[in-house]
Length: 388
Length: 133
Ligand SMILES: [Zn+2]
Image (tube, rainbow over the protein chains, first blue to last red):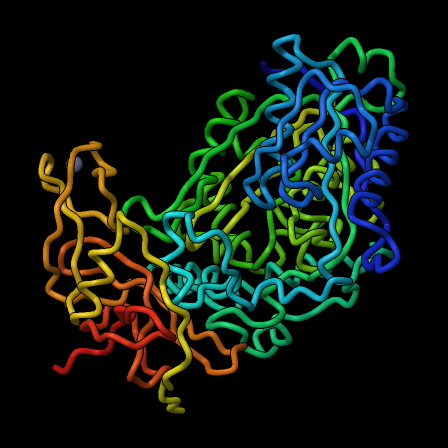
């Protein structure tokens, strides 16, 4: 499977607030953008992947019809914000197996226009979900369950609020160059730790933005890539995992990245220290810190020291991350940051990131996503890309 | 700065045939767990089949004592509350609220014991409060 597919098209919707558009329309606009980026048309598409943000009760059915595609392979696996990284892996499998040549992946949504209390309101859901009756009545929200991970990490490893704040400082340092970023002001550690407490120990500035928008990717077979003019960004490693409460053996100190990461690195035949740029899912600062440890960029428990003092800032630190400003500052469309993680990794690999944040040697880049709740149950997906 | 926890309106848990006994026991003020008749392991949340070996399981009484594994005080809510995991003496951790306490004085590792808090029209929820020394 290694190297059997390329990312030929990547497109991020420019909007951050879209009250005048439908969700299906946003999906179509990003599909058009990614196909144009690749130099392909809708009639080239023979595989389509989407997740729970795609409108329609039956997986991909409504969107395949809306986009008027003729597909021989579809996948609507929904693992929250990590879905689109997992879809890249599934597209690579389909292409390697000869079941597809041009796979389109879309994400879009408008939680900002729809006024969702995204991270602070408990969500009820389908009570047949077996875990829900033991959780929902206690008031778990997105933010307070990630906060549980942060609290445990601090207790067990001595991680500090200031160390977590450095993650936001790095993201904001990058976001100042992104004219579409929602938050472009560079913030300080003091500003983060003095921002209002949302759920201990996470402050408002430890949390990502809420935005409308979306993104799309086009994954293609080598013979298609050979016919295109874009820089060749090859998928050399993918890994996925699901982690939850392990039947009561709860361990909040690590994420599914500890399982998906090594799978991707093994397939790629590279080491964490080989990676020149990383897009790391950043729903909250703690999400970044735990994934950095779990992916092997530093030892478990050393994440706080690793992220401090600008080590994630492009041009300064050892691991430039989220150079578009990430979910913390730029964009978190549909409350799912997975596709923008891949898009910025592709920009870096192509040498098309903003000149102020472009890494000098983008030969090997990584994108990683966490979807669902780090403190309840979540999907993890890792993608490693090589610039050919 | 002390901030005492306040009771808040709680939605009722919705049981099913597999879990009804758990909530019936809660209504009697008892916390029960599911234990495997094959491998002997206790798990949470309760299931008919042991998640470790797919063997059959039976209900056992929990001591109701445990320690705080992690928590967070949710400030952005009409009534702030502490949500987190308690690790029970039986070795499993469960999501819960920490109640009848100073929210600012909670500590990971602290000893707690079970109490039951009423819900709106359903069985009460097992929650945990600091144990007296
Ligand atoms: Zn068993």
